[in-house]
Image (cartoon, rainbow over all chains, first blue to last red):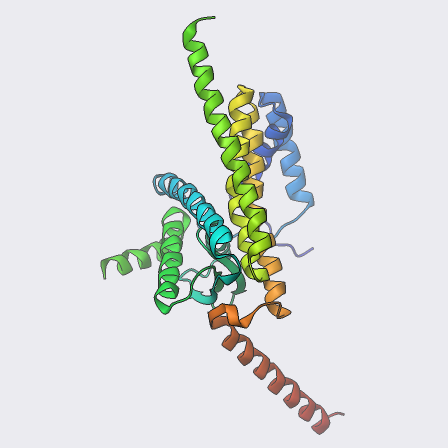
Length: 181
Length: 140
């Protein structure tokens, strides 16, 4: 078989996650249970092959914690906003479909950005163009060109935040230069 | 029983009560949104956002009431799976809806995907007509 071998380092996040799920499902984090979980995780990862996710190898926890808190805050704000729109505007709400070109061309970054913006204020990924890494978003209650521009800027800033957490060095450098300019 | 413990209990009970009520409200908002929004794409907003927060609040209330640390990982895993799957399902439904033209053009103020789709369709038509011409020319 001509499968590309995945190095243990690349597979480690998946294995750790599987062990956590195992422990959480049994609600038992004793060493024996975790060891058996790890054994199963390796077995599952070997038997059910997934294409390796390209990870950059860096993860900045200092950026990740504020980002997660801001994310939670935005999820709450988005929920209240959608609740308000549903109750007050209802059938008269105007939306638009916006194209947002992303900086990163890595599948993981595009996916993560898409996930985050799907969960925060008024945006939903309708289509992804992987070759140019452009996201097409449906923006709820976006009716003027300024609001379109705001949405685009916000998505790009979220992507910048994600790159600071786990982007590659080149992307990080690009962000720094952009911020300096 | 010392009185301090009951104060803590009261606080925890109050917080989880607030979480439960707000969480239920969020789920109600999702239902109202599904009913009131005009087209498929805006309904997907209602289906994804308030209910993710609603589930988070309900799970947090469960965690507070159970008073055992080992339920937290299970609740966290449940919520993370929700976070991972909700945008994907909303995207799949939205994408299928857009492609099958289940949308109201008059409710969109701008559509930057439309031009791209038209162009792709045009080039696909050009390609297929060219292929047919090629096939006619050199079939051997």
